[in-house]
Image 1 (cartoon, helix red, strand yellow):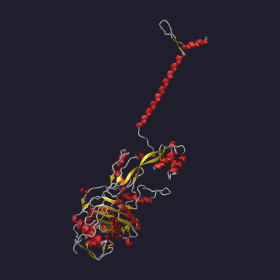
Image 2 (cartoon, rainbow, N blue to C red):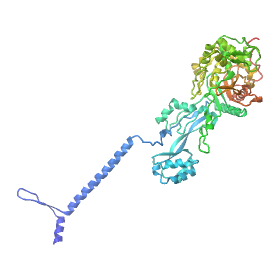
Image 3 (cartoon, rainbow, N blue to C red):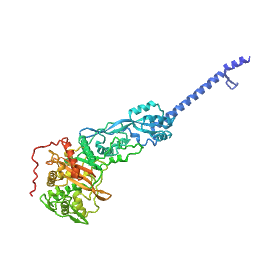
Image 4 (cartoon, rainbow, N blue to C red):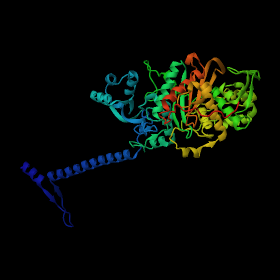
Length: 586
């Protein structure tokens, strides 16, 4: 009976409504109540899932709209995959390009056993720093670089280790096929592909760095940048100066070739140099090789020197241009000059009056000083300034040195500067000024980018008269055949020029037994097309045991012109009579 009532109750669903005359009661069965509760629970579960998915969606949207958070370990490497343009020489030969690489990083939060990771990575990655890598893996940061720019084989070997928390990031690595051949011109980049020196740095200064920062160069093939240099000529010039430094037991050597009509730099080498593929070399103890890094120093454009008797070219050009002398003039070089406690004498004096060509041929300090005295201090300083020898060179190459000169010019300063002592300038500036003496009197600022003759002429500035330039060509030719320039003469190519042997300044004093030698040459002298300047620093020996410029710097010029002249399109002429030199009657 009781069970019957319970079953009946569970099935019952009576609703007794309360009316005006009667009362109603509701009897809801157990099954109906359970169904209602189940629907309520399902609704609650659905609402909970909807709330969770809504929260996840909102959070994802927030992450998508927010800026990425970078750890301190990543730094400024968000643009590491940005491309740089290829750099090529004037003939399209490749000088620099980008290679696709990968770099190894770790998420220390996912590293299970730091010791195991370090041990396994040491099998693949050479010279890994165990303590530093272990410290990074235990740092509990979100990102740590472990090794930059790995090879594909190293990447495959690391992937085979199956280490959790280890990943790879694509990057670019700059590659220089020529190695050290044109290192001081092309320059190099750092591990983040940012230009640090040479034309690489110049490109960043022209806006490439801003493009990279904005991401506009990522995986974008940029047009190649063409330089004015000829890689064939550059290779020869570097080979010659490197051999000279070794053969003459010198501290350093260098050379540059300029086109006198355009100001284009066709080659420039300075040794010691370095490999831009490995700008910093590590020693076995893990320290940086500082001696190797000294090769970064470019002595042609980034250093200043007292250029010695090469400055006599400018002093005589000044006297001729100002009308103070002519090629027929004679100056008294019979006795030394005593001035301000100093005695100025000739290295191998003739002790007699000298004609202007003889002053140049015998490199007379006394004769040159007399010419400077005729022009005067103010005129002397103005003339050297006009030739660009006293101000910083205007060119694309970063890091160009600024010349030094006396704060106040006195007569003794003007006299010593006339033969190349007392003013320090860069060898590149000396070559540029010499080009103006040869090309008809126009100063072309040097460029490492291609420039046509028309473009060059539009930018050129006349600094001496055409007549003065013709007279200086005569003097260069004269010295090339009769004077110290004979050591630079190449049969068939008609070379002229001027030597410069200067006592090297060490700790503010002139060292009598240590020279800085230079030779500035032009060829072919009937119509000069190229200026070649060589330097050699502190040679211990030279041709036939000599240490002067005639025995060191001049043979360097000879070796360079003999090999590069045919490449530059200069045709040799054999068996022809020498150009007429009798512009003056003795």
